[in-house]
Amino acid sequence: MVIIEVSLLSGFIMTSRSRMLLENRTIVKKIEVKANVVYIYLEKLNDESQTFTLQLEQVIQVKNLKPASIKIYDYYQPEERALAEYSAVCS
Image 1 (tube, rainbow, N blue to C red):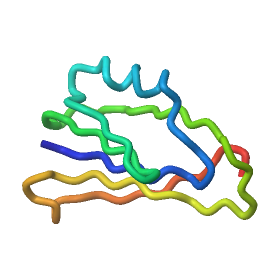
Image 2: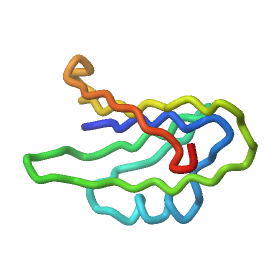
Image 3: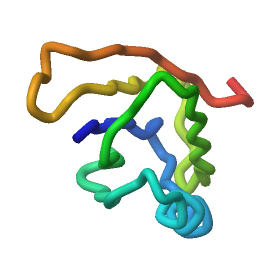
């Protein structure tokens, strides 16, 4: 099992439409949202490239918005991981 852990930008939430689109993908096993982090559980990955799009909605205006992190790792071997950061389009 593979987990994609997306820390949400301060003041943002994931839209319900985004959640629905992710849940409809066969590779996605389940989605959890806890304390401003979205966990996307995947059955497995292979060599084929995958793209996941999350639509976020700003609900609170935040000044000096800092980038947030995305981690992807194997549930059974968490040392096998990749890290990235993202920023709001408007920042």
